[in-house]
Image (cartoon, rainbow, N blue to C red; front, side, top):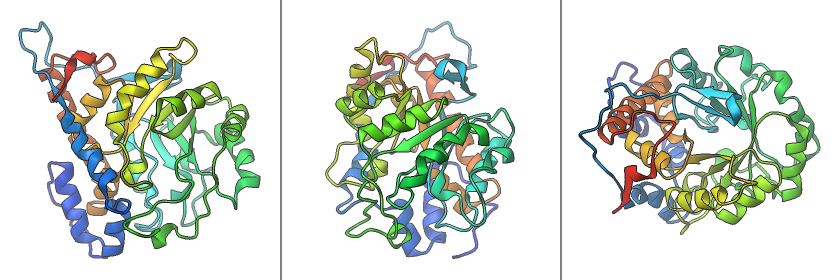
Length: 346
């Protein structure tokens, strides 16, 4: 791996990605930025944001300061921003790369989703929460593998004792990721379990923490997850890394929101969004379409690849600045209450 250029002043996520692609080996470029087979789902995740346009507003009696704070699950989890690091598997980049993602906590009081398979190099999931301030909520994300099936439910029960503030189960990786025409070497030895709805309920019953199901792409699966105990869902197609010729996450988001909000039993569900965000404008569109928070995945890879010490924080800062500017221009003064009127279909 080429030595990262740590002193670059990069001003967009695209610039970070270009520099990261230059630094990484071809194999890691494929692992981080590749998509399944033709890559059509990956591409659609980005281009589908163009199906929605933001509505510029003027003559509004609002100050230039935009409120960015938001709370989730009845105040159990609080965040100073409506976006945060996703549960990405950083382990193929370099040992203990997850610790460089945690450096976000130095500047931002936001939830950080920690993938269990990113905790390597002698680290243990039990020690991760002690590495960040107590007011930075960590959310532990689990995968069910056939090899860990006998222990995963017991481990989930330990989440609260370890200090995590929420638990996530990813349910869309049952056939592993496929990049191009093959499963990448970095995860080839993983035997993912096909998650059943009974196992979602079993996990829900094992913890009192807010429980989130990640990998939802249809209204019917959203309802199934919530009816079986999910307090929140993540609308996500795994960054276009599972299935080709699929819908984009932003296309299905309003359909899922409409279904969830139409029923009294599911109305309080926290809906998070993942897959394709590269700009603050993307975040604002997702919020306007009904998401309550957005997860940032691949850009975090780019950030720590280019600058291990400050890259993750820089990614957050760029998105924060873009989001606040765009929100003000659209007449939004509180990001916890973004109206659907902010967007229109192109």
